[in-house]
Image 1: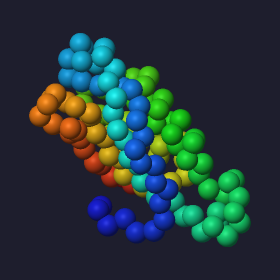
Image 2 (image 1 turned 180 degrees about the horizontal axis):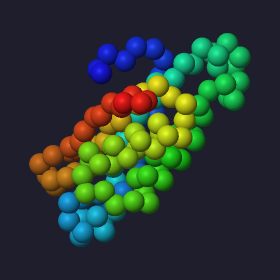
Image 3 (image 1 turned 180 degrees about the vertical axis):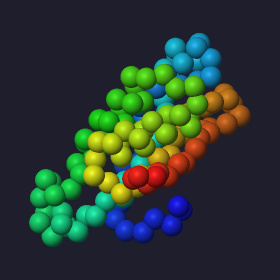
Image 4 (image 1 turned 30 degrees about the vertical axis):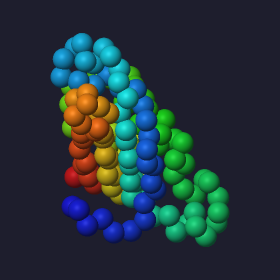
Length: 124
């Protein structure tokens, strides 16, 4: 599953506030998370026509990501990544998605970020 050939839309450095953490107190703090997405879709038509309607508008992808991250509670970064992948695959006609989730300063003074990267394919 790591060899994903073809075109992809990239959204990198997304920063959103999320209710993320194992404890209720940690989730209540709504700390920032950093997200990177690769969304696999055939981009040839958009490349030929130069029309936004022939691609997947990255602002729409961001809206889905922001909704999932900001409006639900997540104990684990793994759960947040999985929910984002599921939502994007459900909403858009894409072949696959790779989601990287990084929690910022999870251990103050010791660790800048920690996180996960998952890849999910449509129908699998």
